[in-house]
Length: 403
Image 1: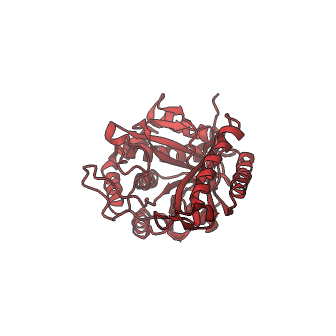
Image 2: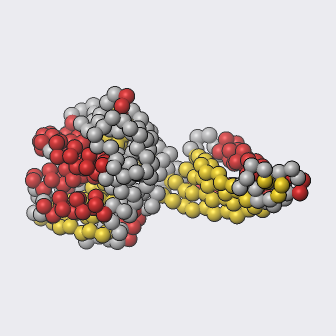
Image 3: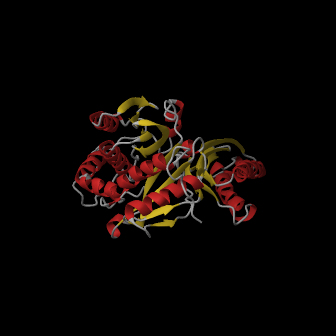
């Protein structure tokens, strides 16, 4: 499998070129027309079967093996963020105002393009590899849209793998996450309805701002005092909007936030607890409320079988001692929709090399070490080869588990 890494290193310059081009031209969710076109052109150039417009702007490439066998899916997300990029002294800064690749999806796309080329040149003897280039991961559920459009069918996908760059880990280090890897990510919308008036006559009003402040404070008790400390959960109000003038009491305040959980029962309980808090606080101040709770991405659960595949491929490709067990993230990840349907694993790939690549994901200064590109491409290709050669009754050795 080390030959896969050698092949990936020969593509290093090409992957850098792809990644920097995507970085200069970021596209938000379901707007990835330019990115999708470049991906599709590359896959067609390799002679793969290609579908475009999957889940609106997604691309699917299919590499068929010489004989029948299982199908493994490799996934990359393509969308950027609606965040301005800070000047970090690079010559491939975003050219689109207010948009930037600050989560590494440009690198994910480039690595999967590289993996497709490596596997096409190597050839696949048994089974199929499906390449899923996904739009709209950042909150718009592009994976679900592609599933609804048949990405897991024809041929039916038996297993799936994805990676995410990590500025926490050094370049090339792999973090394998057991069980729940990413949290369920839900959205909360609360409208506090009071009665506005003159700031000099507060007794004639119901101050929606003051009520909202009490609601926010009370909501913090749900996690700190009503949730088992060993059961991870987050309730965050991230947006407050209300009022029109400094000398007027606001009649309404809008609160928007997120709930992150790892256990469905905790998710249900917190959903009910938030409304109970809002109802109680508003009633005590003579206000009313409107409440919406939108379930977003589910918990991403990595299967033991696929985690084992990640570890074996890592050992075979990079050598022993290059992976570790990582911590669960309370961030959301819509690869979870794939993992609900087929055995899957998402692993983290380290991209930190010095302080310039140490900024967190979604930070305006985020950047990554491009030496990770061939490592990621080789690992994805290696996982496909390992799976197709060893999975199922016709596999040579089976996927062996180690303790």
